[in-house]
Length: 297
Image (spheres, rainbow, N blue to C red):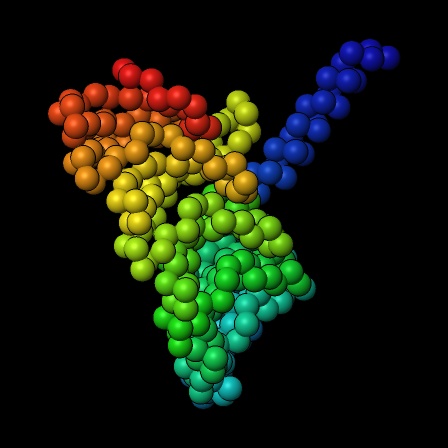
């Protein structure tokens, strides 16, 4: 018996099996019978069936890997949910809260990122807004952000995801304060990323940028902070999970007419142009995203 030939044959067979496993993709389609419709993947029913009499609707159907998700409007109960199922069925679950027409609740910004789904939920009964997340297979619904109260004038803006984190800007209407925050997509790790901008002084935070240092495996954020009490501007950085804030640039003082412009990030490097209003000189500088002493270019 030729052992080498046997091993080669086994290796080729294993490669073929693995190749077919990873390249196989279920084919999903909309099916209909009179005034009812549903979705199937490879002949397996994966969604509910709509009822034309009640004006049920299935929208935003999508397939990501071995899972499908969709929005289902129940016309009899006047409520919308997002659901998930495996392409081979038998795993149908609700991913989100129910948004009832009677309370004017709404689900928006629903997105799937790998194993997670995120969305924005407005609770019309409480007049509050919050972002949530769930595993794509369900049973892991968590709060991602603070709760924004419409009565207090709170707001959540600039929400985005990067890797296994979400970032956003939160305005606290009661305290008149704004800051950037982050959380892991499975929750329980909410951190403040930026300085707190107090609106009473005219302070602000803006220009959040995210960059990954592949060699180090770290993810950093950079942002612009205007300190209205001291009348000066500077750029800062932090790790995406917080607790590592660094000053990147000089301070640009309003009273001296200093200015920072053309700030840009390229992986671990940051560069900018600094106009010194006192000396009336313009120079270009660089720094590392994790901080240090600015160096003139």
